[in-house]
Every structure is written in structure tokens, then in C-alpha cells.
Image (cartoon, rainbow, N blue to C red):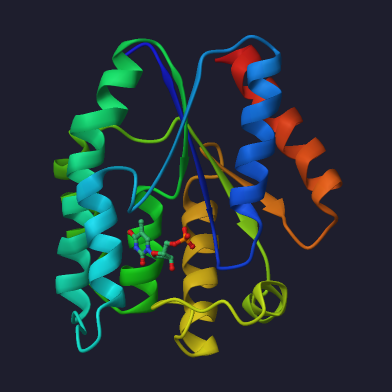
Length: 205
Ligand code: TMP
């Protein structure tokens, strides 16, 4: 694998998607070969998984949720991420392996060891080279997104606080791979920090 995988994580409304798009534009301007993708809906199968959650009367229990996201991840890695990395691309993914640890593990209480093991199977051991964690109080995130609410966004605030704590635990365990970005500041300031983290990483990678 000669490419680089950078993942974007954080609670709802943390601004990670906006920052990903800004970083993509910047990296392209500097002449890098960038691919942008997202989970769960980076493939058609993944899009179908996302839609499952929106179907009336469909309420996957926690482990079923894990399997759904893992199916999407497996397909995503096989169809896109592995081939791109093989071709030396710089891949930016809006959520990846840490999202299942944070949401289904810390948020729903599914065994973290099991999720880690399934992540390795689903990805063939491909792990992010760098993860940007956009940290924000979930209450502030919901103020930002207003009335937009999907399956997970409708969860109680306590769930999202557990997700946030879960992400912070992942950061504390792997501070070299996971870089914490305080997402409560202006988008321009956050974008500057993201750029310098990524440039420093690529310079030294
Ligand atoms: P978003 O990235 O557009 O916010 O939407 C993805 C939603 O799916 C978000 O609410 C988090 C959730 N999710 C999980 O719960 N587990 C996962 O493994 C992934 C990839 C996403």
C-alpha cells in the first residue's frame, strides 16, 4: 500500500464534512491526487445500509447495527479504499473504523474487543494513517444542525455524550494517529489547523 488514508471523525454537527471538503480543495490545489469518500454510504451497498435506518419500523438492535456498518465497511474497502491506496492515492474518508467503536461500542455498549476484531476483518487490517477528531459538545452540535435529524441524530443527548467520550478515549489511547481538533472555533481557524496538521503529517510521512 503506497497511498495514505486520512479519516474524519466527530459527533453530529462537529463540522467534519465541511472541513473535509475544504481540505480536499486545498490538497488538490497543491497538486495531490486526492479521493474523497464517506461511510456508511461510500458505495451503493453502503447507501442501502444508510437507508435501512430510515425505513419506518426498522429498529436494528446494537449488534445488528454493528453488522450493518461492517457490511458497508467491507464493501467500501474492497471496492474503493484498497484499490485507491494501491494506486498511491491520498484518501479522505468521512468516518471509518473509529465511528463504530464510538457509536456502537461506547454509545450502545457493544463489546469493544469484538468491534476491533470485526474492523480488522472488514478492512483486511487497513487502518487510518491519520485521524482528525473534531471535538465538540454534542449540545452545541445540535444547535448547529437545527431541525435536520436522522436516525442517530434523533437519539437522546446522553447517547451523543457517550459517543463524544468514546472518541476522546480513542484519542487518548492513540494520540499519535488521532489528532484532536477543537471544533467550537470558526470554520476558517479550524481549517488552518487541519491544514497544518495534514501538511506536517505528509511532510514527515
Ligand atoms: P454522518 O457522517 O453524515 O453524520 O452520518 C453517519 C451516521 O451513521 C452518524 O450518525 C454516525 C453513524 N455511524 C455509526 O453509528 N457507526 C458507524 O460505524 C458509522 C460509519 C456511522
